[in-house]
Amino acid sequence: MNKKINNKYDLEERTAKFGKNVIIFCKSISKNPITNPLISQLVKAETSIGANYSEADDAESKQDFKHKIGICKKEAREVKHFLRMIVVAAPQLKEEARILWQEAKELNLIFNSIYKKVK
Image (cartoon, rainbow, N blue to C red; front, side, top):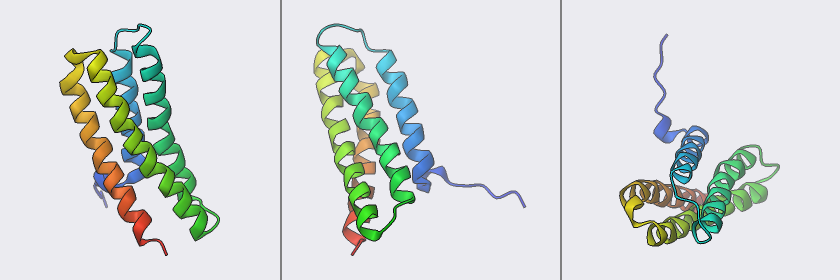
């Protein structure tokens, strides 16, 4: 049976793809004293989303799961912030950043919903 998987709902795959897209985006940014720390912070925040989701998936308790999902939602929000700052430093990247910002927003909403449902 050839079953097609919808990766939009596979959060492990979705966060990994998002990480890849953010890294590719960051490689396109001109490096200078302003963009360097923003790029670093953006990559750290974004890669933390996928890493913490993977840890949540293997959580040892509901409390551990909720904590890791909470980190995911905070990091997704942080990604939105750093994308906004990069657009200030490199306005020509506004459209690419907007697409990534939208994905960060959706991930933040997804993780926020999961977080609220965990008792």
